[in-house]
Image (cartoon, rainbow, N blue to C red; front, side, top):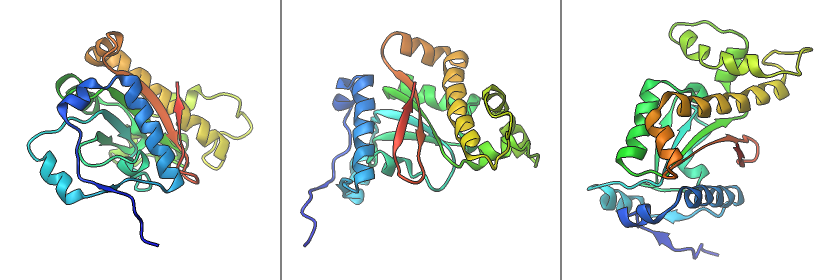
Length: 215
């Protein structure tokens, strides 16, 4: 039987973006992930959305994700063209360029949510745990070392072969990145203090597609 769901061609407008609160944006992403997990994603006319968004964009949030190819961010939250700013870097680490991008997204373009999205079975996390050194990757992985050091309770096996340890480091790395956003960006910190944005962390489960929030 053919799918009868309506195909949307709309993109978020400035008025709709301005009317949203940070809490509402977070709820919209959680609801979108629920649809993604259930296979009930919204059908979109991407050609029409491209044309509709050509003259401006009013995304509701900015997501920092790992570069991992298994996490299609817009799909994970059932979002379309013009819904989200997305920054991607191995290990979802924070650096000056990422912070500047987040500041543009929120302070200039009106996004209401900053979400740092880590994931299970992360190669960057495993590389940091094993102290891999290779070209520019060495410096990148050094951003994750504080998360590795902060995780306790695994004295018997602190290797990348210990999945529970890797998972704990991935969660801690999200917390480290969230804290660095607040510590290193006065712009975003002040926006959050004023209630204009919310800064959150989350972890993506590879086997299920579920996104779990991290306070």
